[in-house]
Amino acid sequence: MTPTPTAPDRTIRQGDFATISAALDFAAEQKTGVNIHSLRGELTEVLSYADLAAQARDLAVRLLALGLASGDRVALAAESDGDFLRAFFACQYAGLVPAPVPLPAPFGGKDAYVAHVRRMLISADARAALAPEALSAWFKEAGEGLGLALTGTLADLPTARGGALPTPDPDGLCYLQFSSGSTRFPLGVAVTQKALMANLVAIGRDGLDVRAADRTVTWLPLYHDMGLVGMLLASLAFQVSIDLLPTGAFVRRPSLWLDLISKRGGSISYAPTFGYDLAARRAQTSATTDLDLSTWRIAGLGGDMIRPEPLRAFADAYAASGFDPRAYVASYGMAEATLALTLSPVGVGLRTDIADVNRLERNAIAGPAATPNARTREFALCGPVLPGHRLEVRDEAGAVLPDRRVGRLFASGPSLMKSYFGEPQETAKSLSPDGWLDTGDLGYVVNGEIVITGRAKDLIIVNGRNVWPQDLEWTAEQGVESLRSGDVAVFSVDGGEERVVALVQCRTRDEEARARLSKDVANLLRVRHGLDVLVTPTPPHSLPQTSSGKLSRTKAKALYLAGAFDAMPVKATA
Image 1: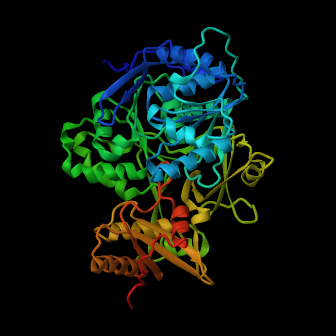
Image 2: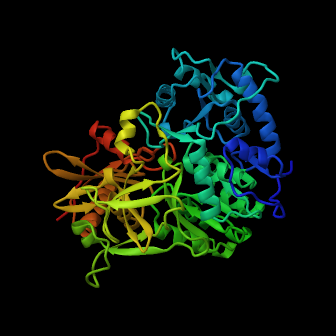
Image 3: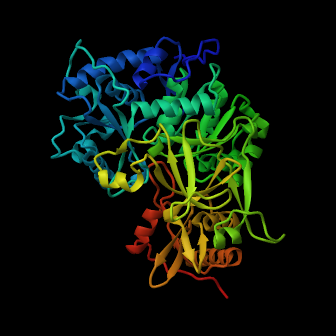
């Protein structure tokens, strides 16, 4: 089996299509395509864009034979395989709206997963649901009593041939993207064809300068906007070959990601900080000198808060493999903006801004250190806003703030969502009548570039100080040897007075060791941050994640308040 070529000599078209199906039709004229790999990293299917277009058109006819009408939603289990790709683009050709659904891994069991899928089916008002054979029974259980035209696999679709397919509407819905943090009431971001294509052009042409010689390698899940839009659809819109590795393969063996970049000459690959961190930690036991990462020109950063130290560790670990730290490209965005809002300049690497923590916490000013011994925090510069878009940092009264003043971020532009599907009240909370999106993020501007400081809902306010939970989590994870990235969740609890709680994953059942870990963390946070923190040790893998693999403080707090963690909290010693 031979993977599709990179095809550097082709004439590239830079994403300027009215719809994503038109982009696929053009890509079908090239030799490039999608290469699908197993959990072991083995190539299992080669799907040229020409074959994908032809197979998707055939499936579109079969989907319409179910009696589905234009605009109907179809839930799709977003496995990183050919069937998901065929089904997603079949929906595009049929005028239907795919709604990618996460896989079971983050949900901790069948019942929780089935309940989540059912909530998504209801939220999307889905008319059909398709899943691989292994998940088909679970999807049928999730869809029971909802009146779906079909819940099953692609093989269960009726046989049908011929028939005219509708003309895609650039103003129509392209897909529903469910937020990775959606739990009890999932909100489907309604992305139009026009918004998607505007974002793809801004990302590929104006931001990353995608070239004919580029090749994408990714392990990011296709139910998340960075995997679906940033990796898959952006590659297709620029006719770039892409190598797909299942997310589970990366989690088990991060070296498979880097090995694939090395073997295929990958030049574009994105990951959250934790992806680089995990790969760097595993580098001690991998043969890094056998890799060639010199072709990797866009090592994208996004999907969570960008942490400079793990990225420096990754660059050091793989310097002998040819990795160039100038490949780092920091970015900022969200599903409500299709994907990206800012991208840092290509070819200059990660750039940071250092702010005095005391001024940040007390005055919401990101200024330089007031004294030589002042506590500081290092933030990533995420670049200027993409062409055609706008970002403003506003105070609580809605006034636009000057440089280095921390406030709430608002965005506008052609990539913004149409709405939260079927949720006008939730839409009105986030999207103003004049087209400005309240991102829910806090940040500031430096010389025209955005800096993200955290989520507004996560901010901890103690004695007039604005404390970011990430600061406390990172301090514990870096300062206590036994802790790893993602082992700590910090949040505040209002019990008459604001209390700060830290859940810490502990890998031993020895009570003395658990107590010692708790005291070490509590003392460290008291010394470094001047806070009394209630520390509760929790079992390994007990801290909840979003469907995209990020720590979910909201879920962690809910579990804590429900009494899920019964260990005794430990305060710092005097």
